[in-house]
Picture (cartoon, rainbow, N blue to C red):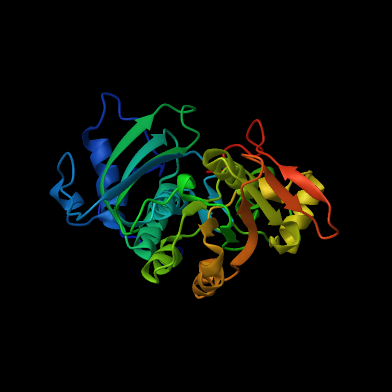
Length: 347
């Protein structure tokens, strides 16, 4: 993101911090829009400066929305801007849709540094370009100091559904293979390390990345994808349990096949965390028929974001909603969701 040129045709306030525009909107808001947002995100839809955008989409449409309140705003491997774009793009991809357009609503806290805001918006631009989407409409509000912890972003995305049939937990069938796209736990640990000032010797960066490219490749190749799930809050364990409970089936995974990097494993041991329950922002599960699993893995490994894809388990008609993890020496443990959030403010 550091190599993204940022132009500023309208001078920023002298103190280079956000000030509250009493009375709402006005010249102060217009100055922010013209100095930071429009240079980075402008396109044919935003340039019309209208109350909304006219979109050209053919066929069934998927839509998703998410609010982003991550703390800190900048973390190893990303920031709230790239997170806002990738999180929404990935939710669309999990629906079997090709992401196309985003809206973005910003709540700025009085006192936020304009240089930080400029970095975040430039990061959003870079992430949108990488994911092949455009920000076409949005909103900007400034609230009093202490009311927004710096910056909150809400993004809504729409895309064209390209999957030949509905993708979701209800499509999972006994005998399906469970594929994980890569190693787990990096995002949550990167956030915690940055927030708490933990100096791990091996720098751990978030896996925040767009997932639509490998997902669309699976669909284009004709793989019969039954379900997709990105592994954000709740991590791998949360995603598996949600799918098992919704489908009314049982899932068994082989623990030794689930990749956890040495730095993440060491950090989890020190902090008393289970990497299976730590959030990710660039990892997903795919449920496909066992006969197509090897081909699906080969396709996924052709993309950097899913180069570590592996078959980690299978679906059975056992106890409805149960997820079991089988260890290297044969012991089995039941995976469950946490009753609360293990690491709050991670997305």
